[in-house]
Amino acid sequence: MHIDEVKIPKERIAVLIGVKGKIKREIEKKAHVRLKIDSESGIVEISGENSLDVFNAKPLIRAIARGLSPQSAKCLLNEDCILEIINIQKYSGDSKKKLITLRSRAIGSGGKCRGLIGKLTGTEICIYGKTIAIVGEIEGVGIAKRAFEYLLEGAPHGHVYKFIQDLKRKS
Image (cartoon, rainbow, N blue to C red; front, top):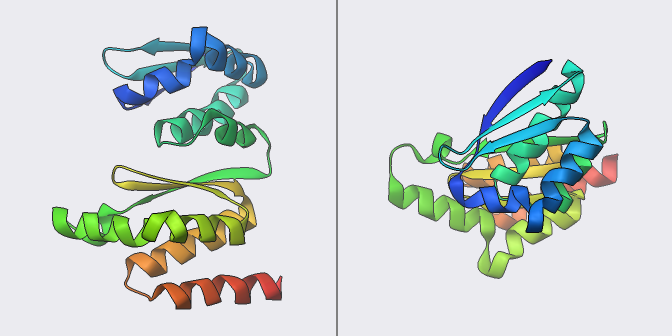
């Protein structure tokens, strides 16, 4: 028996479990693992007969914990999909005001920036708390990660969109 743990925010536990435990059962069935969720501490214990199954289920749980929908996160069971998490505090330091400003830049007016980067790269993006979670195919996630890093470093939105389009044209 192989076991690993993931700590998730308490407000995301209900999303992980789903209505009448539906999401939890789906994850357990598709990932070939058992989930034991402690709603007090937010710790999710992932256990399975195969260590690879436990290893593959962990990013799925982390994606849901970082604000992505279970439907978006399930693509992580496909070997072509990955999860990338960017810590916005790495760019804002200890300044709460700068953290809010950088989050706002990443989201954009009415969610335009986040939506456009997701559309251009074919990824699902969620900005939750102090992180940006990106799920999708390896190439798209890599491009989206670099785009958000440029934005967080202060690049203008237009330059970032052009950067993505230029990279997509080359590939």
